[in-house]
Structures are given as C-alpha cells and as structure tokens.
Length: 289
Image 1: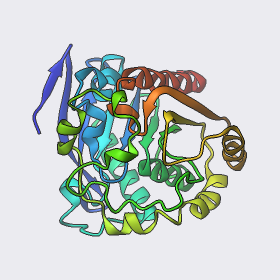
Image 2: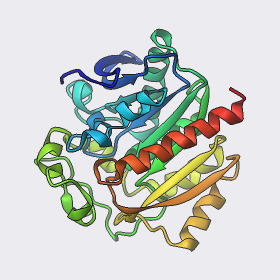
Image 3: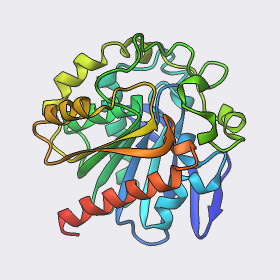
C-alpha cells in the first residue's frame, strides 16, 4: 500500500500490537498536535481502506480528518489483512473488542491522541464499537459514531457468506447511482474474505445488542443511509434502539440522504465524514478542551 500526501497530510500504513497479534492499519496525522483521534473500524468483508476513498479522493476520511486537525486511525480488524494468517477464522466479538482496544493503547504509546478517542464504525464494525464501549477498555473514549448497523435486521436471513469473497456483494449496497462509477472496480482492493467466527455471530446480534446496550456509557450517534437494506430504521425501531442504551448520556439517530449501505464509498461520503468530525468536535467541546 502506498503513502499518499495531500495538502500537508500524510496517510501511511502502520502495524499495531494487539495483545501479541499484529494488526495492519492506515493512519492520517495532522501537521499540528491533534485535537482528538478517530478510531475507524470497517465492516464485514472489507478493510481499513474503506475509509480512504478508493474511487474518489474527496471521500477519504483519513485525509479530511487530518486536514481538520484530527488523527484518523483505520484498523484492519482481527482476521483481516496482516492478521489473516494468524487468525484464519477471525475472532468472536468480545475478543475483537479486546484486541482493538489493545491496538489503540499501543498506538497511544507512540502518538499523541489529543482530547480523546471517538470510535467511528461501519456495519459489523459497529458491533465491535458497542462491545468496546460496554467493556470500558479504551482510555479517554469520548463517544461512538456508527453507520450501517442497527439492532433489528430488515432481512429475513442476514447471511453474509457472499461478502468479501471474490467481489463485493453489490446487491446489498443500495442503488449503484449512489456511488462513483469506478467504485466497484477499485473496491476489489478493499474486500477481504469473511472470517468464519465473524460470520457465525451475525444471526446472534439482536440478542447480543440487548446484552451490551445497558453497558454503553458514552454518547452514541447512529447514522442510517436513506437506502439502507440490512437494518430496520423506521421511527418506532429507532425509538426502541435509543431506549435500550439506558446509560448513554445521549443517543442520536440520523439519516444520510442520497446514500446506500456503504456511505463512506458513495457520493455523499464527504458530507457524512464532515458530520462525523463535527460530532467529534462536540464531544471534545463537552470535555472542556
């Protein structure tokens, strides 16, 4: 993976220690001391490059965040990329959360993180994020910003077996007009085989959410794409979602218009990422920084 420099921002690959397991990652670091750090977690069958605008450089969260004063760390979750050989079946959710937290702590020993950490997570990464928050294992965790993940499936069989195999499962992305025309060619570099343990837990998520939700004690923002096919996001479902996060100081549910499931790869990625950074800035302000 090559290094990219734009407007004084360097995006480069790094390796992190996660409880003795090496995880690959991409990081965008601002020229000045960071205001905060965004820890980005990709979805099932994807990789850290999801957040780096493969089809449209303007869609890169890593560049945009660093340009606006945030360090952005996008991690290849356990079982993906560098750790795939060591973890051929991946890890279950609780183990992933522990590994990602350890990787974040390793990063913080070598890089300033500013006022704290906001976890931005997409799809299955949102499940890891909620598990992270419930476990309380990320120092200076300010909040969660989750897209493409809810608590009630809109599909009768949430089978992910076709995701990340030879090509992205584009039928689940929403209308193709929502993405730049080269997205599905360039995204071949982003997809990765779906680890078996991750796939095993997909159907169990509604019950796992009910167990995890009361333990989340930081602000949470959920974003659902206008054309989100995987998750229910009607008003009653969103009200129920918010009601289950009883210990969170605030829970927001928002909708991203003109977007499909993979918001960060679509035409509205920049709009969405600006809202992510805005939410992070609000959490930093609330801390008094």
